[in-house]
Image (cartoon, rainbow, N blue to C red; front, side, top):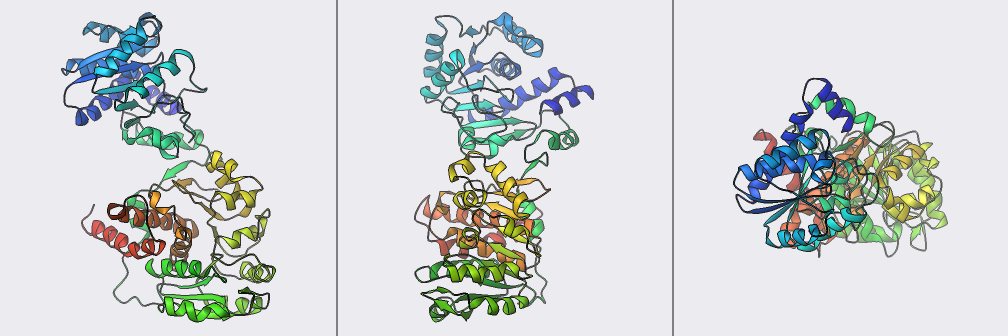
Length: 516
C-alpha cells in the first residue's frame, strides 16, 4: 500500500487528497451507524492519525459532538497530518494530548459519554507491539465497551499477519483504505477487525494490481480472496442434454472398521456437489452397509485385513482407477501397513486425486511422494496433517498458515487446501487464495470428509485442480453459512453440509440469471 500510495502521488493525485478521501470514507461509514451523536476520535502521530484528524473535522462540520485525542503534542505532526491538525483547530477542535497527566482521565470521561469511537492510532506502518501511551490508549478504548470504527486496520494489528495481539483494538467495523490487507482476511486478526468495508480513496485499481505482487507474501505471487462471482464463473449451468457420464466418474477410496461413516460422508458430498457416478472402494466387510446407507453410490469390495484394506487391494485398485475421471482417497481409511501398501497403488495411478486424512498421514514427513505423481493432486490437510507432512507442529502451522500452505504446495508440487477458519488454497507459482465462507458449525466430525467429496466431484467434472479446490472450499463454507440461519453456531450433522450444497448452487444460478 505504501508503494501504491507513492505511485498514485507520482501520477498526479495529491497526498492530501488521498487523506481527505480516507477521512470521508470513515465519516460515510460511521454515518450509516450513527446519524448524529457523540464521537471520540483517538489519533496517532503518523498518517493514520492524519486520517483521524481529517475525519474529526468532517464530523464536527456535520454536527457531531467530537472529542479529539492525540498521542503526540499538536505541534509534533508533520506533512499532511500537520495540515489536518491545523484544519481541525480552525473548526474549533482542540485535541487533548495523551502525553499530559490529565489526558487519560479526559479520554475515559469522553469514552464513557460517546456513542462511537474512531481508532486512528496506527495503520499499516506498525512494525512492533504497542507500548507506553499507545498501549494504554488501546486498553482504554477496549475497556469502554463502545463500538469502534478503525481507520484502515485496528491499531495493534500488523497489516501483513493474521495474529491478534491482546494489546490490539477490537473494532466493530473497519474501513480498509484502497484494498484489504492480510490482517483483514486471516483469523484471529479478522475477528478484531469486525465488519470490513474496502473504500476507494483515489488509488487506481491498475496501480493496486501492479503493486500487489511486489508487496504480498507467498513468494511474491500475491494473495487473492474468493468472491461469489468467481465461483459462479467456475460452475456454468449444465446443458439440457447433459447425462451422468458428463458430470464425472469419481472413485472414493475410504473407510475402515469403525470409520465407515467417513466414506459415506465423502460420497454424499460428491453426489450433492454434482458428481454423475460415485463408486466407494472399501474393505469388503463394509460394502453392504455402505450401499444400504447410500444407495445412490456404488460400492466396490476390496481385500481386507482386520477391517481395513490389505495389500492385496493394490492390484485391483490399479486396474479399476483407470476408468474414473478423478479419485478421493483417505477419509477413515486407516494407516495399517496393508492399507498404506494399497495407497501406493492409488498414488501411482494416472488419475487426478484428492488426498485427505489417512492418505496424507501415510505420507507424513515425505510430501515429495505426492510430487512424484504423474497426475494432478489436491491435498486437503487440517493443520495437524499439514504439520506432519512438513515435519513441524500444528501450532507452528497455525502461526504461519500462509507460509505453511505455500511451503507444502511447493514441496508436494500439488494444490493444497489448508483447512480451518478462512481456509487457504495454495498452488505452485500461483497466488494463494483465502476462502471467506464458513461458520463455527463446521467444527464437527466429518465436515472435512464432505469437503473432500465436494472437491473430488468438481475435479471429476472437469475443473482444474486449483479451481476445484477454490470452488469446493467456497461451496462447503457457504452451505454451512446457509444452515447457520437455522442452527446457529453448533449442532450441525456433517451430512447436512452435503445436503445444502445443491441449494447453494441453485442460488448461485439464480443470481447469475438476474445478472447480479
